[in-house]
Every structure is written in C-alpha cells, then in structure tokens.
Amino acid sequence: MTFKHLEPQDYKYLYRITAEPTPLKSNCGELCGSACCRPGQHGDLGMYLFPGEEIMFTRREEWLVWEEHDPGDYDFPASWQGPVYFVRCNGACPREMRPLACRFFPLAPHLHRDGRLQLIYETLELPYRCPLITADNSLDPGFINAVQQAWQIMLVDQRIRDLVEEDSRQREEDELPVVPVFY
Image (cartoon, helix red, strand yellow):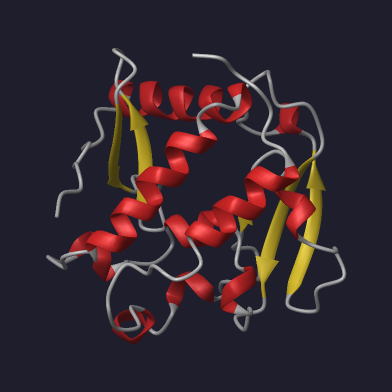
C-alpha cells in the first residue's frame, strides 16, 4: 500500500460521500435527546479533526469552538505533528458541515493484525449512553457503506492509519469487545 497525506480534494470527496447517509432512516437524536451533539455538562465535549480536515472550515464558524492541542500532550501517534484541532459544537451545527468524527459515529474502524479493516461499534468511554450502541438498532446499510468507503480512503494517510492501528491494538490489549457491524 502506498501512503500519502490526504489533500483538500480528498476531504471534499469524503464530506460529499458522507453528507446524506445517517445511522437510521429517522433522526437518531430523537432516541437520546441528541446527546452527542451537545457540548456536555462542563462544556468540554467535542471531537478531534483528522490531520488536514481543518481545511473544510474557516475557523470563524459561530457554531464551533476551536482549540489547538499539541499531539505530544495527548494520546496521538508520533506521526501526528502539531497542532491537532479539537472542536466543540454548540449543539446547532449545519449538518452539511459536521466533522467526519460526527458523520461516522457510532462506528469506529478496527484494523486486525492482518491489515483487514472492520467497522465496529465505538468502544471509547462516553459520558452518555448512545442507544445505537447499547440497544439493538439496525443501522442503515447506506450509512455503513459510506463509512466503510470513507475509511478505506482515509487509511491511505499514514498518520490516520497509525492512529487506527494504535487504537485497535489498545482495544485488544484492554480486551474491549470488538463487535462487528453487519447489515
């Protein structure tokens, strides 16, 4: 596999293919009061952008609060050179502009030791219960396909691949459930 850094046109394509598909045919936020779209009790919930994804934003969005973090101060692979961008939403984002981490949730990539990619339910400890993870909700096949396609593209960036590999090995070490997503 040849590795490269994702370019602005790659992110534009990723945003295009993940714009419409959603986990359910209905608004999944109705199940939980849109818990993942809120800044949290202490205003500290948000997500990290992938390296280069910041190109999709002006940094003047009124619905986002931006922070620059040094990847060495957090749990990022050595290949991630600073800064990394952490964004918090005020709960009212324009859906067409939501970051990739929001578009992929509740799915996460898991790379097996043989290099095979598998989509699983997110295993991060969350400050809320997502009914898409905890209940038996069937995810929309179009959503699963779009997320799978997006991760295939994203993994050509060595930095992103390093992150997914580290997360996958940590999951295995911690003996977290690696529940594959099927449709």
